[in-house]
Image (cartoon, rainbow, N blue to C red):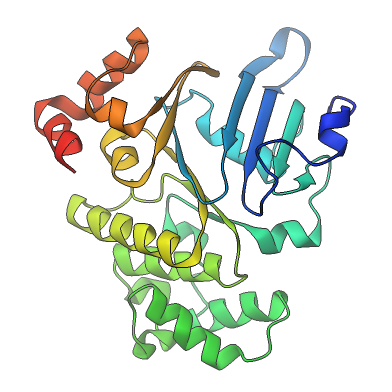
Length: 276
């Protein structure tokens, strides 16, 4: 891993992340390979997400949006810049406290859940890992929080629908009582009707728990439903940051964002975004 020497700003409390749950990405570069094989995945990316905010990263496949999430959780080998969540500046390793504070929800819930573990086993393991003792009661509460009753405890992933699996994945992410959820295309593997249910669930959970969301999506309608601000990425570069209200009003200034609005939404979905 390559990390620039931390500045005074990085060593101390980072502006914009003074409260639990804030996220700072400043001048982030991520690359893969070296020499002639070097590929620049993210270039000079900067975002500042307030605690309690829901912020979206949008762009086409390969634009670098998921790479930013992976950099935050320490899954990219070579990067430089400043990364911080809450009051913790992130370097080569993630602290134990980080894994309590930050959790990730993945695109494919079936792939992210152990197929041979029941829901009860999945949640038991996570809760015990984070040091909780009243495990049985917490499992029942977590399932209730994501709209599943206690009978789902002893089902296996293959016995659940796609939406139910994603609810279990969200419950597991909530088990550590995090401040931040990183959402990597959390509804793209679901059909449209189930997408709406999961987005409404996430909205309710954020309000109830005061969570900060950083969500990656290629779908502007999904981002418009869940987020307050959006950063648009093209070929590793953030080309525009705008409020969702401006997105709904189709007030994007950058040509790439304007093209995304047309290609990703179309007339019908653009109308639904404006009225959601």
